[in-house]
Image (cartoon, rainbow, N blue to C red):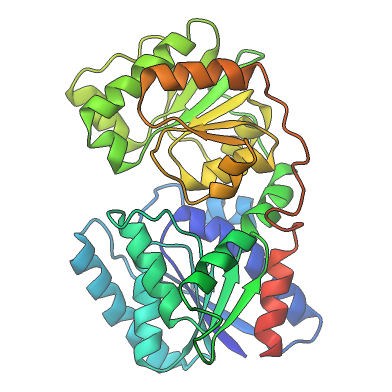
Length: 362
């Protein structure tokens, strides 16, 4: 069996790495399974060097398409064209895509036009905000996929409510658990303390990068004002995304109380999540990782794909409201311990095994 995996961003490589390791284990055990990895270049990361792949124990991509930094239409269209050529040449049995980037959608469209079966990892999650490009990508990808690997029961319910899995023929919905949990368990052992940060014993970890916050100066000012106030009593670590850094510098926004750093490597980030007291973020992935490492999370968005975490109280949606951020910070910080972290909400850390075995058994 031959699988072509389409990836476009560093987080996707980290998630896909857990599945790739399982594929290699199955091949070493005698299974006839091959993976070809295509990196579209959607999110160019200068740290995705040989060292990155070696440290993360992730297979290096077989193809690099170099498509990034373009408007959605141009980017997705060029990806479809180049991915199609690879698929025609390699004739895979499956195309596997992850999450909700333009690369995800491009891989799904290219495969569907060639009648190649699609496996979608991270299927079924919804923000119910159709203004998000990611929401459009994930919905359309789910519609054309043959195997949908859902991280949670709620993701399965979302697909069932849309008629996928119940009414759509030649489609199978699988509750696999979350490959990010597999990765969290694996990378916790490899975590590295950042050497260029002076860290207090108790610190708050924060990230801000989503366009809804960085492109709206009023929202960003509210968030930074809250963080500056929190930093009067607790150290706030803020690794700055380039987009956020540019806005802060352009409008000379106040970050005087914050411990600012450049973006950190993933193994450094794992250490920071595991050792912080609380997470404040607008990142979808970091919301889950906070939970995996038993940390409470305040999410500076108006909705989240991970409603399960809100329902159990592990995550609080605070938007960009300074008073709401401060109020929930005080209550969350004083009640920082989570209960029953590994309660099977996202599986038990064997999602990669389930995914690969399912592909092999089809």
